[in-house]
Amino acid sequence: MKSSTYSKLTSRLIAVWFLVALSASALHWIKTPATAPPAPLGIAALLPLVLFGVWYASSRSFREFCMSVDRSVLTMIQSWRVAGFVFLVLYSYRILPGMFALPAGWGDIVIGASAPFVARNWSQPRHKVSFIVWQVFGTIDLVMALGLGSTASLIHPDGIPTSAMTVLPMSLIPTFVVPLFLIFHFICIAQANRNSAGDRLLFDRVAQPAA
Image (cartoon, rainbow, N blue to C red; front, side, top):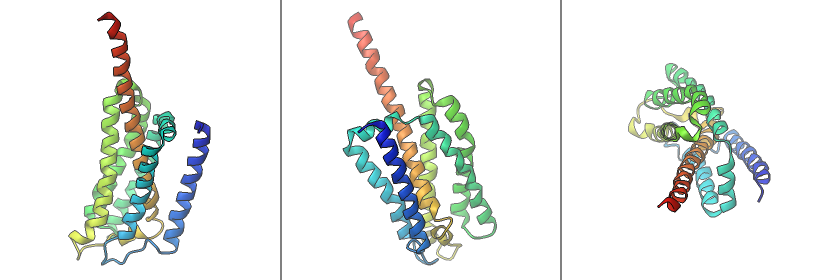
């Protein structure tokens, strides 16, 4: 399949994914009582990642398409994460618990604020180590937020619940935004690792005749 075809296909799939996440939230399929762990939210967040992983592992042409996407663009998109200040606002109004809102909010702000610098300066192959480290930190921030959001009510059952994350508009963050940004992080890391392997292979080919 051609890259342009994959580009159109993935754009449509992302649009459908957004509409499904929006509809599921609007129909209260994601909504969870304050006293219950947000299991539907966890499933909605993990399912797109599993589907992407299966597609990526089983389709060579899809992997090649992922390798062709501009990593600086994928990194720049992460700048939207400065909107994580909303978590801090909701914490200040006691709508979200601090053990979730504070690390998730500040982590997103740091990643989002630094994304333009990384996209402009570190997306080049010569900065691959710094680029990968930043992508890993961005991934850890998202995974930690999902984990804390899913377990906060279990750790502190009498504390402020995370049920606000299971209704619109906040439910779109774990069901759409977070999985999408995790996929972008994965693609960027895969590209950087592939470039590293390509650089070593090229070096071996050049050095072999000299030996």
